[in-house]
Length: 257
Ligand code: PEP
Image 1 (cartoon, rainbow, N blue to C red):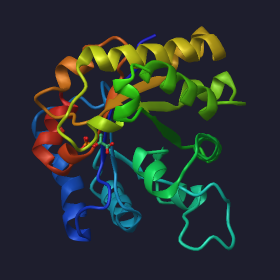
Image 2: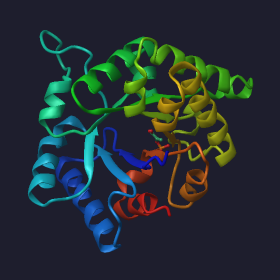
Image 3: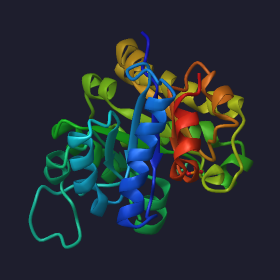
Image 4: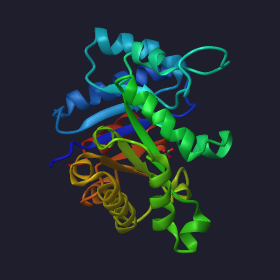
C-alpha cells in the first residue's frame, strides 16, 4: 500500500502571534511558488494553542492548503481541568492532527504511555489524527536496548486499540538524544526502529494496519538530511522542530523529492 508521507512542523512554544500567522502564510506561499503538488505529500504545522484561531481564519479565507494541529490535548472532555484544552475545542478550530506524547510532555509533565494512548483514542474519537510520539533516551541507545524499548512503548501505547484505529494514526519515532541537538540518527538507525515498529504493529494488529500506519522520524531533520531519511522504506514522513520555524527550510523539507 502506498502511504502518503506526512511532513509536520512542531513549532513548540516559539514566536509571537504575528510571527506565527506570518510563518504559516509564508510556508504555504513558498510551496505554491515552487509548484509543490499538494496531495503527493501531506503538510501540517503544529502551532501554540493561542495561534490556532487565526491560523484557521487564514486557512479558510486565503485557501492556504496546509493542515494544522495542536501540540497536545487533554484526555478529559470538559469540566474542572484548569489550563487544559479538549479535543472538541481543537476540532472546532479546524485542527486535522494533534501531537500526543512528545518527549517534552513526557519529561516535563510526567506523561505515561497509558495516558498518551488514552489521548490518542480521544483524538481519533473526535475525528482528528493523532501523531503518537515514542523514542529512547541516550542511555538506552548506548546500552543497545533501543529497539526493545521502543517496541515495548508501542505495546503500552496501543494496548486495547482496534486495528482500524491503528491504520488511521501516525507514529513518530523520535530518539530523544537527537531532538534539538543537531545529532541526527543515521538513516539506517531510523529505519531499524521504524521497521521494528511496523513489524510489531503487524504482529499485534495484522498486515493491513501495518501497511497503512504512517511512521515518521523526528530528530534534527533539515533540508540537508531529509532525502536520505525519507529514502528508508519504513519512514513515511518527518516530525520537524527547529527547522520548521524557517519557511524556506521547512518548504525544502516538504519538497524532499
Ligand atoms: C521535535 O521536537 O519533535 C524535533 C524533532 O525537534 P528538532 O527537529 O529540533 O530536533
